[in-house]
Image (cartoon, rainbow, N blue to C red; front, side, top):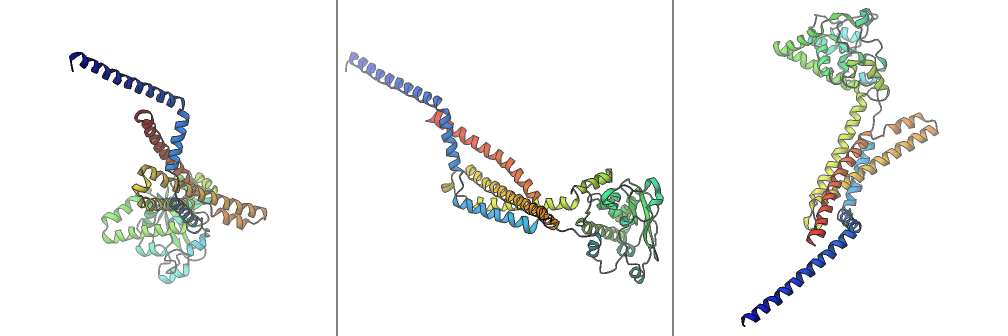
Length: 400
């Protein structure tokens, strides 16, 4: 091949390559124009592809109904609002009540502890065990005028007036009151508690005490008075726990934590609207058990993940979260319907017992969990969907 033929061959090869490159550019321009003109349809197709990839399978639906069943059993068997006891009935059920009834003057007398010996800030261990908690006392309070912590305390009465009943601060002040035979009011005024037998006997507020000494004497018993002091404080702590537990599920229950130390009337007003410690504990239990069921279902469903069959783990997690969200929504909706139907029938038939029993089944904690999951999982699913859309769009526009 001479030099002229070689140049001709190079020219032909170049023209062929040039024509191919031009055709590629033309084809890419046409494809780009098509994509630009059909963005809405392409995004719709990607969206359908995402929905198909995260659609619940038969196994997922089985998990869904299993989760709904567990949530419904929880609502009606484990975490419903229980019937509240009267104060006396709760007192009768208090741990250790059968040993010596501290309110029974004859029983106290037979036991040899008919009165508090009242060594200031230093009751004996026997006094602590055999007598009622000192902050349950209201007798004799009127003599203290403006420092009396009980006037205008509302529905909760002495439970809002005496800080030993506070579900949080009571562990400190209530324990200290028991260990020193005193009572500390919401206004931080403290009083020595004494007792007497006979007609009109029992515990009563005797004189002012120093709140700082109530705490300091308890501190000294715990750290500097050996085993005897530790035993007194430990017994006082147990007695505080038993007393709070016995008051918790009574008709008036315990005040909302801390609030009564600011204004007991506010604590009582909240209790009038059902915001008291018993309901707080029950709603908390509903939240805890509902969340535990969700966690168990999520863990079991995750264990069944198969990469070849289920594909991307993130898309599988979307299915898991859909199971949880749908089951929570179904359970919460059914609970609201059941309660609404029950209360409606009760109102229509003038049956207050039916209304009360229906409202006791209201799953407030479960509804809170459902709402939280919807917000949390909705954000997660939206994020995964955006990632899926971006990746598929990149494949179509750039790599296709």
